[in-house]
Image (cartoon, rainbow over all chains, first blue to last red):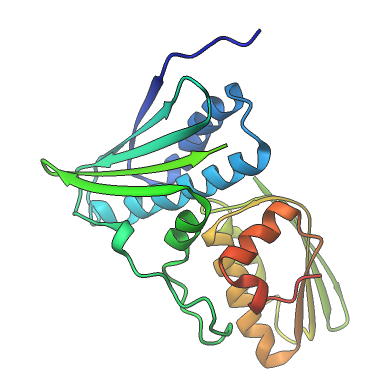
Length: 143
Length: 99
């Protein structure tokens, strides 16, 4: 028998630094593995978490230092997960970010914007709010 | 963790990737490819053992494709279904030659 979860929340606070990526993904994978998340979905969530964490690490504190708090919320029926990123950096709303034109050829393609496109296409939802100096970004994926 | 194995023969280069091609490991692949593509006419990435790719990894494939467009061919072989789906949603399926 697997343990039954009440709607549960786990949190990790880390420095917004791309070198912390293995720690962040280890935290996320630990939770997903307990939930018997399908491999394919785990890969999609890992990619989304990487893209968003790396974006925050590179741009939120504009060269300075700061933290990111990553929360994972699991509904009691284990139907999916929501991952929330909170930082106190520069306001940035990836939800209204414009997708790159993916119909262009290799030579015409720009390098930027791909990460957020991957998140948008692979998650069921992405929500952003800016409250009391905090960027709050939540992605939800159903299994 | 990413292992990179390069097999060069005449003007052909095969690059076998094993593990994860992400923000942490993509710079090492980028460094390995710098200079290694000089004079290469056929470039093949073998992804049989690649488990994971993020946009940082896609960027390296895109910049390799741009180099090879000028001097020869590039193919991406043996990607898993999961990786192929990532290529699909990002439009990379249309840019890369996926075998």
